[in-house]
Image 1 (cartoon, helix red, strand yellow):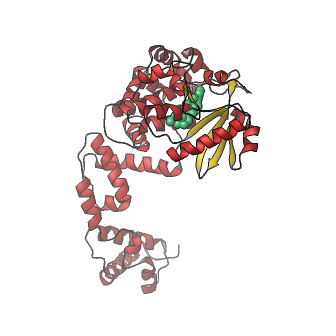
Image 2 (cartoon, protein in one colour; image 1 turned 90 degrees about the vertical axis):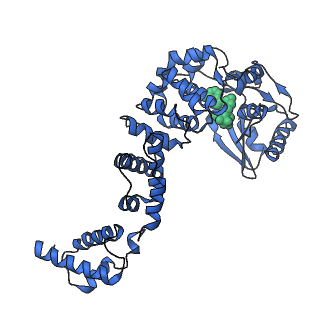
Image 3 (cartoon, protein in one colour; image 1 turned 180 degrees about the vertical axis):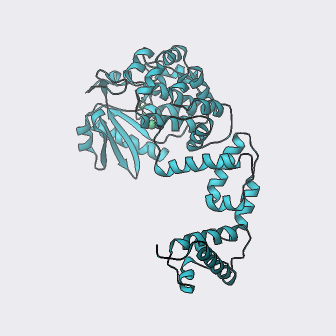
Length: 394
Ligand code: ATP
Ligand code: MG
């Protein structure tokens, strides 16, 4: 991170040489003072976005509407944001307009929490306008100015408070907490995608349980469309869980509302693990289950089962997987195509039926995965089907 810090200083110096004020701000300064590595570096400046763009070669306008420009140096991102004060908030989330300012105090006053509004100059000198250092030392999350007003302006800030609890293990200051209790209903107005970004961070944090307990105490969990039961459970477990696994637990424990947005891949994953949990919570995994679902899904389901207090079957799953005679239908020594070579067949749909049958019997150990044995079985099956249904054109 030191390398990035040196590069970020170059960004700040370049802005200063061009006659602008520029400081480190936000999460970067907070984390640096706490001795935590930060993923990105935020810089705040009196230069307008246009002036920032003109000064640097490799830039991306990331948040044009809000005055943010990303300066790229060796693949690392430096977020350079123009001092601004926010216009009126009409939708509990976005300011109607932003006004660029030449005064750093305007910029600090629109930030969410005191611990996120510390500035540091290129010589690492700290300026503290909101008693932020006290709050940092006392491990307190406190809004800048009146919490009711700040949460009414932008209700996402309530979830951000829990995100910082989860990341830092801090407490939420009393008035800030009271305001969340009063205004929690506004969380329902936030776009679900933004809520999911915050939940993702809350679920990943080292102090997840503490953050979830705060969410339960303030009844914020009730605003989260069916996640409440699951989150109450997760708040009590120390099990390491990926965010998607937290959601899976929520889906198992309650009727989660159909508002949450997942990629198609994750949607399939959730459905599969929820179903598999139902099948395996009180019964053993078997070869066919392991074959159909694959090792990773079975292990994830087992992890969920353990977390929910059911038996650990990891050893069995791994043994079953290792002993599978085939891992994929392609591994069968006798293929659907072979049936067509060996016998005229009008009903092509029988091939799928027969291959499934072969697959099942090989996996369950009823047939060896050997060409001659499978051929004999397949041809017998064809005859049986002919007798049963007659092989006329489809
Ligand atoms: P993290 O380490 O999780 O990235 P961060 O404090 O850097 O934490 P960001 O979301 O990257 O959080 O935002 C950078 C800074 O911008 C914050 O520290 C805060 O000063 C300000 N900020 C971000 N979102 C808001 C908001 N909704 N309302 C007010 N200020 C905000
Ligand atoms: Mg950040």
